[in-house]
Image (cartoon, rainbow over all chains, first blue to last red; front, side, top):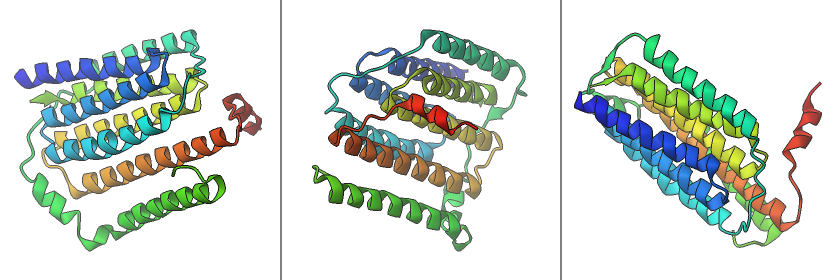
Length: 158
Length: 102
């Protein structure tokens, strides 16, 4: 019961942060709202008992991406946001319907605290999943090459 | 104890908010933020499903690593090209993407 209450608090925090991301007029505030939403999802992972995924979420999304976004967006003076209110209201109605659907149609199944999570983490580093890590390495190569192309053509601060 | 339905509700909410941002906004950075929100929703749904099974398998962790890597590289690449376009004064109009329809 306490876990459910904590999850509902985290749910409200995440949803309000994501709403603030769209309703804010300045781009920097939108990025801060996104970082708060990522923090809320990390807290949800903590409530679910998935500590490692919460740590990964904080490291990758909040620590890496949000800091990079703040630095990149800091040069933007004023955003030209053209938010169409009617689409947003329709999407909010869809969100409400989705929440009602998730509450009623999903079978009641509790999330238990997994004890074998560390063992599965160690087995994930075995060789049969090497193709995933090759994909990650290729994506990282894409990132580095894009930065190198930009450095060649723009002579910016990158 | 957390019910599976609550985690799916959180995932659905984040996904529909991200979809609203993509549909309603014309700014490139806000669209990318919405895509990141959809990535976060997918991570929440995946973790909820795997945690409801009792034991989180190694497939979950490899898929989560892949999702994290794709999200990080995508946003960094797009931001880098956004800085490039801003530096050269190139306007990126989202409405011109309608030329791609056939």
